[in-house]
Length: 507
Image (cartoon, rainbow, N blue to C red):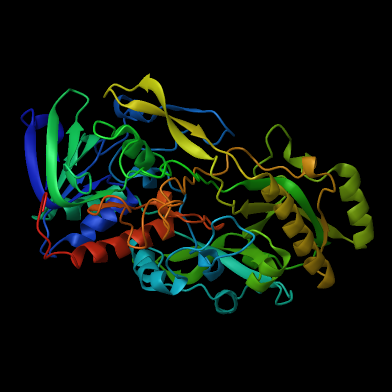
């Protein structure tokens, strides 16, 4: 059932077993999973069916650290959230991403890859890429496109592409027909109200842009508002606690992460006959639900034991033809490999050769000073706008350049290519508009002094408040986050189902 919150009586109260704020990929996945589970659900969405400027203005904010994508443009306040402009890139995190690494600050998720595996399988169906299948050797063989003959030190990876799934178009009708799910559009959470002991949420207090107020009382509450907005709402809910909700240790908003993307910093010269077909985006034998093929793009990373021994961050590198990829900021694409270097590499290659560059998608290590904060500027709802102070640890660039040297060594040893990695770290640069992958600002962990939610995505300090989405990532890996976000949402839905016997508000 869909309800326009602007039509509610002012001050209206709604009751539910579960209230989910945010109807993007995570929130809609949870609501879909909770249908017919014996739970009543209220799903709150700031916008309506389509993105409109009047609502989008609520996402305006300032960037006071490293610039990333425009934070208003990257966040869509409409049904389906940012799946409205998602490009469809899908790949799970790797097992090593969940492990504690003594050289990566605060690494180690409180869950294992194996814990998330059944939910990854469900997520693949949700985003319409078919069965969970990430065996590169089998995929290459099935498509007739060979893997590069590199050593076991290289981890052969690949991306699969969702159509992409627009959650509003694909799933809104199912929610509209669900008798036990009420979707409130144009409904904004303005404050999280706690009980007298400050240990449980009593209500989500909301408001429309037209001024209509409402309250939702539930047994359990979920924030699924996105990697920035989850932190913003917690920090802005300070009517009872000046530091905000679930922020007794000052971690809400901290450890914000992105995926630095390196374009044009690494050049590759190879024999013209080298078969790179698996590393060019093309349809595969994998089928979507409508029978159309899933597109696949091969990538290279380092094996987990190599990364550990070299103390490196995770990354994935894909090949781009010179003139065909995205140019580095302020450069023409032909300048990606300096002309003198390209000529030297071509001469060394002997005979006819091809020149390409690598696009590298990198992990960043959690960094406490990278954070989401609030400003004194208020939006039309009277809520403080955000300031995004994105930073990366100084050693991350050094590690990534070292990772490229190791990769270059392996390509050379296999006789595949000669690779140019800048000797001057100032020329090994990454774009400051990496991808809108907002992660880490309400991170998951076992220690409340450095995390916000536990392994079940429940906040350490408020026992009926859960958070999901990219903001709970402990570390970000190098994979595009949407598939993992959907998997975590499926997992949280199962957690909420197991709690059906618990009483509603205030108990």
